[in-house]
Length: 338
Image (cartoon, one colour):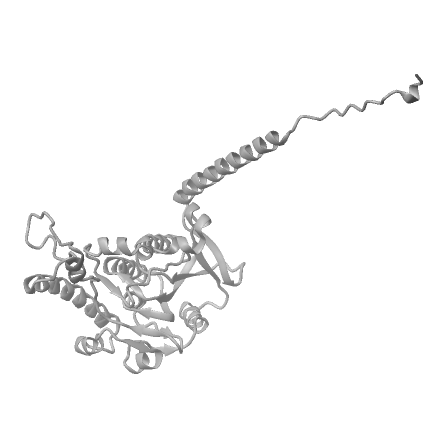
């Protein structure tokens, strides 16, 4: 038999699959990314505790030795943003190169205690450095309260479209007693005193309980009126009380009622401050905080209070008393800038 007649045999050698190697590498890569993100968060939190806040150039002459600090209340006045603002004010107080402060207010207000803390800090700061106020879109309730912390005699600016006022106090409360009755749920808290559970949303307030809370409201309200009376020498306390209906005022109404001094933008307020300081060239600076790991992952949604996202949590927490100088208290959005 000839070789050509012989049957030819073709042998195919198949290489073993290496897909498992690729999957192993991908899994290792994933663990590596998670590990590095964890390190990034740990180091970020560590260094943010060491040196917050960070100074940033905002405008003006970058090489000017004299600085004006631009502090922005552009958040709902509550932790952690109020705490960051207080730290920024402390930084301004310690920095001798900062000659004055331009406080920008764009806030619906917030907690009574936090509003007063920032106001008190500004009062102490203005003893050594001028503090001027400029209102933007909304400077209501606690935002207006803080505006009274500016230097005496310094004009308070409002933009043409600013909303301000809303002078008053609110303690948010739900009354879900009828709903509880329909679904068979009622309040049955164990308490040591008759007023320990007064804001429970599953029961009605008694007349006596309302009387107790009205005393608390009136105390905070009177502090608000006193702060405005002292901050607006053109108004007496009765005039302030007449304006303190809780309503919002437009910029023109606020000017006519003596709540603000001038209609204009931030730039005009800055020029007034420069004139008061006798400076022509200044470096305007602002302050910021490192973005936290949660804010990095969640973005803007990380700025929303959890209680604003979860109706059940809001209901459960509704019996926690929170006295607020607040317009539109349900708004939970905050900003991370100062």
